[in-house]
Length: 217
Image 1 (cartoon, helix red, strand yellow):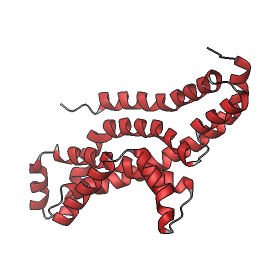
Image 2 (cartoon, rainbow, N blue to C red):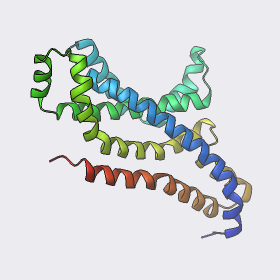
Image 3 (cartoon, rainbow, N blue to C red):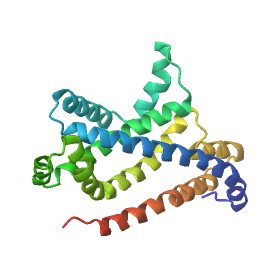
């Protein structure tokens, strides 16, 4: 073990700058992933076969391909087709797309957990399918899916570490740079681990709170 407290302290400014990038990536990707997931979840149960099978294909691909491969494909593969994207943009697209696929399945399960009789009752009152989904079904489903979506967000925060492979100066890359600069491994990565823990603990607590509050009976 080569932990040195002075190196740990010296590394903190760089690590905190990297953590800001990590937080920004996570927040944007979580929001976009949630939007994708809500739309995808509704499409997954649609009577329209194009929407249903299209969303199923999207979910199957994004859940089946490792996130790292998706990042590499977008960052290194697209330029060969003359499509150039900034590393931050690539990271957002990859993280949001993968997160959206998992949220899609969570939302689908949440919608299907609602008594089908509620949809029939809403339609009998003159509501369109969209109105019934928006006013009756989704508000109930969202409460049920909040805990698993929070858990998926926790996973996404940790997965942001992979963006260091496409030259983004996130928290992990900041740790790698300090390691090279100081020729010390344990001290900077103790800081990296601590900051990741501080970033994820609020989500762990939030997930626990939501599970207790919205536990299905």
